[in-house]
Amino acid sequence: RKVATVLFQLGSAYELLGNIDRAKALLDRGIAITERAYGSDHRSLAAPLSSLGRVYQALGDHARALDLLTHALRIDRCEHGTESPQALHTTKQLINICSVCGDLARMKDLLESAIACEIRLRGPESSEAGAMLLLLGSTLGCLGDFVCARDTFDRALAASNLVHGPGRSKAAAAARARLGAASAVLDD
Image (cartoon, rainbow, N blue to C red; front, side):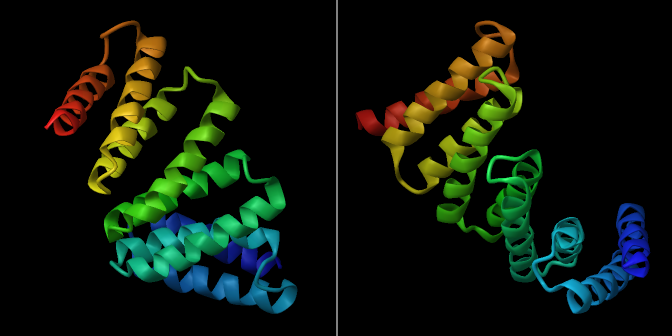
């Protein structure tokens, strides 16, 4: 177990340093050791699986990154709860991968879950929730659901006004612009 922990730490360090191939090799070895000793769903695997997912994303293997992050999220949710900071962090990583892969339907579901979790953890004045609402609105628009997109942009604008005051942020300007665009589509 100690060897695996050292491999995880070294792998994460190499990831931060940008040595992706070395990070991948170390994380793979540490994960294999832990899986042999404790099984593939052991709680100590969530963070290394997330790190390895980021490594695969950097290598351009988005399908493998998606699989690893999905596995990490399942462990996080079982170990810490569906609305834990750990699960929220992994969900945000999955949202990023879904965006890159163009999996908008899954991205929408993950965003809805992340927004609800963010608001419960940090309150409705969370600027991160407002940013995710903008992303959700854009995703809904890309999926052709302009009514929900407009409503979501309206929520994002309200959240931005709550955080920064009426009309005082770039997020508010973006929400107003996107709200106008969604409304224009619906008016046509």
